[in-house]
Amino acid sequence: MVVRRRLSSILMPLVLYAVSAGATSYFIWHALNGNRGLKAKVEFREQAKSLRTELVDLKAERFGLERRIAMMRAESVERDILEEEARRQLGRVHRNDVVVFLASIRPKAN
Image (cartoon, rainbow, N blue to C red):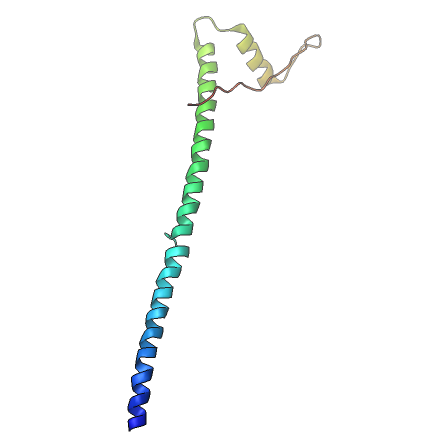
C-alpha cells in the first residue's frame, strides 16, 4: 500500500509534466513552422517584395507603351514610329536599308 501510494505520488506529477511539455512543444512548433508561423511570415514578406519590384517594372513598361500609343494617336503621326512598327510587324526591310532595332528605353520608376 505504502509503495503504491509513493509510486503514484511520484508518477502523477511526472505524467502531468510530460503531457504539458508535449502540448507546449506542439504549440511552439506550430508557431514557428505552421501556415501562419514565423517562417511563413518571412516568406510572405519576401514574396511581397518581389511582387512590388515586378509592379514597378510593369508600371514602367506601361508608361512606355502609353507614350508610344500617344505618339501614334496624335493628329500628326510620327513617321519614324509608324515605319518602325510596320517593319517590326511585317518583318520586311528594303534591301538597301540598314535598320537597327534598339531595346525600348524604360524610364526610372518612382
